[in-house]
Amino acid sequence: DVKVTQSSRYLVKRTGEKVFLECVQDMDHENMFWYRQDPGLGLRLIYFSYDVKMKEKGDIPEGYSVSREKKERFSLILESASTNQTSMYLCASSLGGDILNTEAFFGQGTRLTVV
Amino acid sequence: AQKVTQAQTEISVVEKEDVTLDCVYETRDTTYYLFWYKQPPSGELVFLIRRNSFDEQNEISGRYSWNFQKSTSSFNFTITASQVVDSAVYFCALSEYYGGSQGNLIFGKGTKLSVKP
Image (tube, rainbow over all chains, first blue to last red):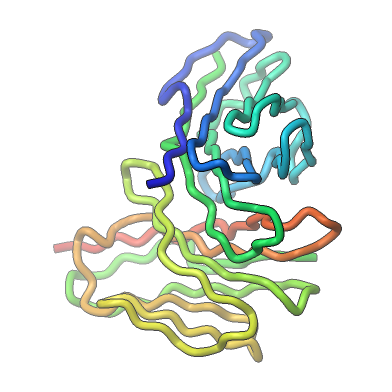
């Protein structure tokens, strides 16, 4: 089974802190994604990566950056956390390459609260 | 621009009722895939089905069925004889190829289904 693991289930951080959310997948997938999920807004794409060291902005990249130094790991970075970044963060991976039809596999989510 | 619309925010039914979750999409591509995911209260999204843009056959899997109609850009999901365990948020998603970055999933806002005993 494909496994996507997010490092924390719950996280509480202070305003202004630098926050790292880590995600690891074990199926050699090319694509990795970071979404945030908010009530009434569904899942919104923050960043995605289709290869090591490659990244592309999603719909809401402001205030976030990402890092993909190894194929299996995709990190989301909040440079200076703010209260409006309190949310559920979901990491996902998919096979990628020229294969368009593969579904994405999701981690269990990290509920981040910024106080 | 690509977009997925789930007009129903919340639906509440009584066990054993049939329920249909609507999904309408917009895309500029001729090649694309549609997906449904389930998010139970535990939070992890679970893949249910994929359908490619060239295959308009309806699909049935147990109590679940999907109706894909390109003419109306819709990919609706029906649960027959609903059960309490079907209570979850259901997301419709679209994957298309554009600009060399393929496989990006665009999600609708989700429909929260509550099935009462």
